[in-house]
Length: 95
Image 1 (cartoon, rainbow, N blue to C red):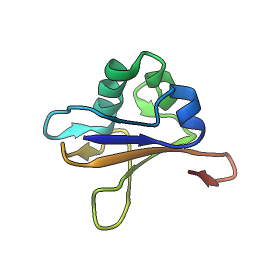
Image 2: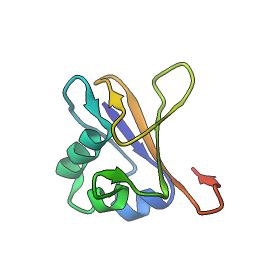
Image 3: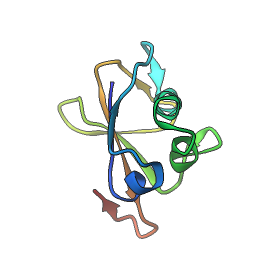
Image 4: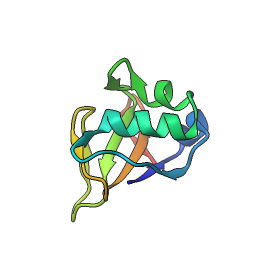
């Protein structure tokens, strides 16, 4: 699966784009765990707080016809493209 990170999240993680392998019916958290194994331990705390996405982090499935916002326990498919982006407290998204 393809993973993209934008803006502040690229700075936090040191990752802009990567490919990770996940099992069928993996969750958003599984993707973060795979990305952390692939790119380093800084990835997990940059995107997750405990077992949930950080309050300033949005996960979006780009593979579907229309982008779909995902939660930490949303299921993803191996061929999906998942984008993580930063959302500031004023609800403004930064690409």
